[in-house]
Length: 295
Image 1 (cartoon, rainbow, N blue to C red):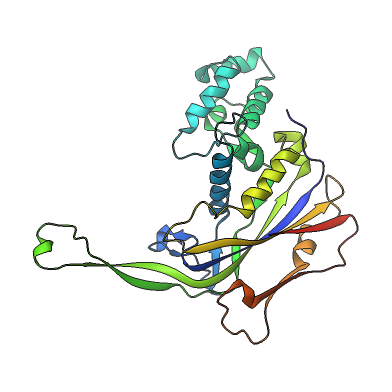
Image 2: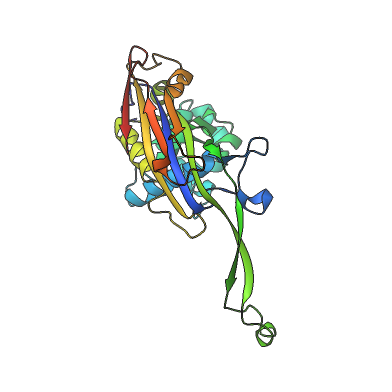
């Protein structure tokens, strides 16, 4: 296993959307996710992790140490089977192998963590190993995200659109266009918070300094190669990183998150751009914590 990071990190990500749908809710006709009590917009952690996986898969294509486990084109059992083959066991014989090789859990876990970036970053549930009654079936990753929430309430709009292509032959005789609709948010600035546990990295997945730097780059660029008409204009505006001097941390995460202030500029009632906001970080941080701002 590679050498793991030695410092704990907490971070804040600020990203915005302009005339787009950052994260549709399939239970609400793909309308942008909104807290019904407050009107604040929501983007799930799963959505952001998907963007990071896509970025890593693109920039590390062909590198056997940076495969992606949660992948829309590869069944999970197939990836599990590769680990079994590499460790010289058959998937349907895992329970029997456990008796003769007590260390098979660690061998399989280390192989999966070594070859799949998203497992050693976010963790995973590997059902093949769970069914085989192995402790490596559920791996808890050192990197976790909160849901992103908009800084101000958002107002989703249902925009009517038309197309000139007609679906049915019979309809072509009666009309020359068809109607449709799409949801957008005119503008919204979102804030997500995250955690990187050096303790879990050392004990479980081997998440390294190289992996950490790739994570920062993936966060900063997670929307740059994922543009679509539905999502509109999305961009990560700033990544604020708090580095602790120790493995277990030098201050509670909430105190560091509270040190990041995002507010509207004077005179701005309805924000429509990132320039309508001010972002500042308290200079007086807890002892043993340093701040780095990337954009």
